Structures are given as structure tokens and as C-alpha cells.
Image (cartoon, rainbow, N blue to C red):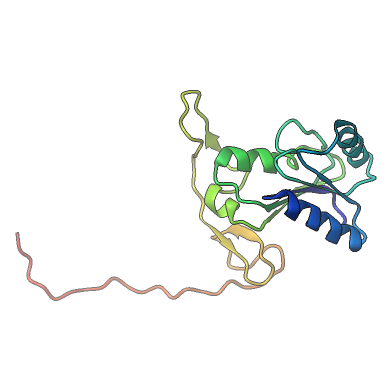
Length: 180
């Protein structure tokens, strides 16, 4: 919908290819990777802040220390096996800004199913323990639009598609004698 954001890729080749495809479709996109000159990086970040760039495709370069509050979309096209990395990437779009009510997470890797939604409460440790979810809420993916939502929904809040119902079986009763 034209919302600005970040796309996190697993390889430099993927990031450059995605940038080419976006530019071919009229999206103002750039690719920032390890070999990007410092001056170009700073210029493109400022251009995104100013609304002149819509997407920064990157490979592990925009994960930390980047503050562009108007960014709304986070696309995960690279695995996020650790919760910390997942939260760092998604936090790029969770900063408040007057132009957005919420962020959009496009999760192509299933990281949100593995780690939960980025807005969940968590327990952090200074002793080296992994980040823990406090209240694990089951999630499901809408078959119509791909939205990841809480499993309690009967209808997708994004597109209105009904989730298939799963018939519940009653308890199985066995006719067996009890034995100590």
C-alpha cells in the first residue's frame, strides 16, 4: 500500500534481486549491505526519513541502531532462529509515528509462529538465559490472505475469511478392567 519499511534478506544476492524487482515495479527501494559505502548508507537512511525512499532491503545491516519512526512494514525474508534477532528486526517498525496506527509484519519465514508476536510480554535475563515468552498465545495463519492472528479468531480480522472449523471428538472410552 506504499507504506515504508525494511526487508531483511538472508543473502546479499537476494537483497539486490529484491531491490531490482521493487524498482522495476515503481517502488523506491535501495539495498544496504556490508559493502555499501558509509556515505551512501547515511544518505539513503536520511532519504527514507524524508519519504524519498520506501524500502531498504538489507542483510544484517539495519537490525540495530536504526531509528526511522515512519517505517511501517517489516518483511522477514531471512530466517530468525533466535528471538533476540527477531525482536530487533521487528522493532524497526514498532516506533510510534503520527502517520501510522500499527505496523505490518510480512513474515515469509515463520518466525512469528516460532517466537510469537513481537508485542508479546517477555522475560529477559542478564544471566545469559534465552528470552522467554510469558504467556504463549497460539497463533494461526489465514489461508486466504496469509495474516498471522490469534487462534481464538473464527474469522480473519484482516480479510474476513472464515477459518475452517475443526470437529472436536469426545473422549475415547475403553472397556478395560482397572488393574493396579
